[in-house]
Amino acid sequence: MSGVGKGITSSSIAKIMQARGLKVTAIKIDPYINIDAGTMNPTEHGEVFVLDDGDECDQDMGNYERFLDINLSRTNYMTTGRVYQEVIRKERAMQYGGRNVEVVPDVPEEAIRRIKKASEEADADITVVEIGGTIGEYQNILFLEAGRMMKVKNPKDVMFVMVSYLPIPSKLGEMKTKPTQYAARSLNSAGIQADIIIARADVPLDKKRKDKIATFCNIAPEYVISAPDVESIYDVPVNFERDDLGALISGKLGLNHRLKKTNLDAWSKFVSKGKKSKDGVSIAIVGKYFDSGDFVLSDVYISVIESIKISAYHLGLKPEIHYLNSEYFEGEKGKRNLKELKKYDGVLIPGGFGSRGIEGKINVIEFVRKNKIPYFGLCYGMQIAVIEYARNVLGLKDATSAEINPKSKNCVIDIMPEQKELLKENKYGNTMRLGAYPCRLRSGTVARSAYGKESISERHRHRFEVNPEYVDRIYEAGLIFSGTSPDGRLMEIAELPKDKHPFFLGTQFHPEFLARPLKPHPLFSAFIRASKGPLL
Image (cartoon, rainbow, N blue to C red; front, side, top):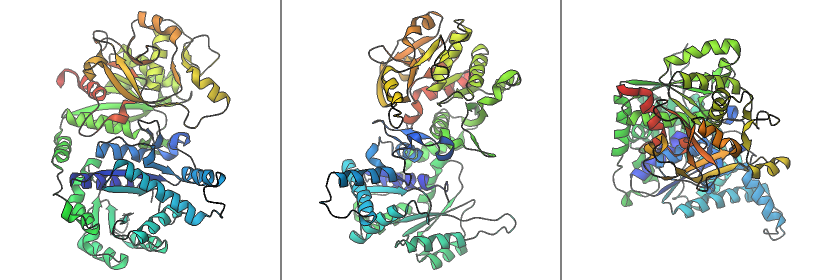
């Protein structure tokens, strides 16, 4: 089933193999016709993660980067749309020599070409490939076929790991293996035999269940790896190593003679920090993409959430994250709800698009600014902070963004000039300001103090910017633009001085994309430190 943990499993396997001294890269295959994740609905697909080169991809790419502490590129991300697009391009260019171009083998072979290219570019010893979707779906069968073809050609260099969920129906109270047996048979029907089965469940597997899976899924019991729910995703590699997963994979691939013992010491210390944390820090994330029917979908902001956790762990704190819908703070009733924000140590507003829930976010920012509650705004969260300041301090009551009301007289946030023509031509996919750009920091500011250097590079994803016509007026009213593009045209960071507010800062970029478990992001750490205040 979806969401069972394939991404974390792939990341953990990659981390373990890296810890055994191998050079590792990772690939995510998304079985969508979309060319990239940029045009996908966040409440259906989750977060759009952005790479240094500007590629908009699946959130699991973020997990790979965090676990491996490496920067990946668009070569590491594949969708059905990209594969078909390239096959059709080659056919139009007569690169198939005029022969009939067929779904099989040409589509799987294009997938194989991409896998090999990513591996070669990274000079990788091990390439971990995650095939999205679930076994038995129509959408990913061509990628399973690509894997099967690779295994046939290179049987000693390719192995398969299947992740399957073992339910424990509450009325029965017994762990059931039949869904896993069925999944294994479905995989067999695609011509693939799982070498290892990762058995996800609420609790660890007992010997009886392992033996049963081994018998009916045609593998030895030691190749059934128990993957119970754990406190943190960062526990997973450590947990897998208890079943010697690294050694099992190395043995299957004939690598044991090349490897040293798995060394997860630094990783384990980080995990231990999180578990030892006793003092809590309460952070409210005010967003508008949380709702998925009657359930909360936190995956939309997964990198933000992990960045908070990572910084909190390093500061010896236990993060308590609360998800608040911005529409809860709209209207007269919503304004009365604002007082509830006082129970949180800090408030964060992440990125987003469109007008829904914006007035609620503006009300939240005004409240936390006036009540000296630490505030961190990311991308849209910075733009809305500028709007709030222009309205309530500068006195421009109709201040807004051109994204919300392009006819307003005071669009303090306006579309970037180069974006106007793109939107006129309905060019939405992969056309925003995307990827890593340099930023220069003003001395004597909160941002400069946090980073400890003058020049930085951060990842972006936006079409709108602070309107240059209003920069001087906003600055004179007290909101400092502490980070700008090197040419001074784009406002990258806005903040209030520390003598005016304990922490009030917004970034046009997305710092959450660069936070790593062993390298917390300095702005998130500064925000968490300010949220805890003098008690830290």
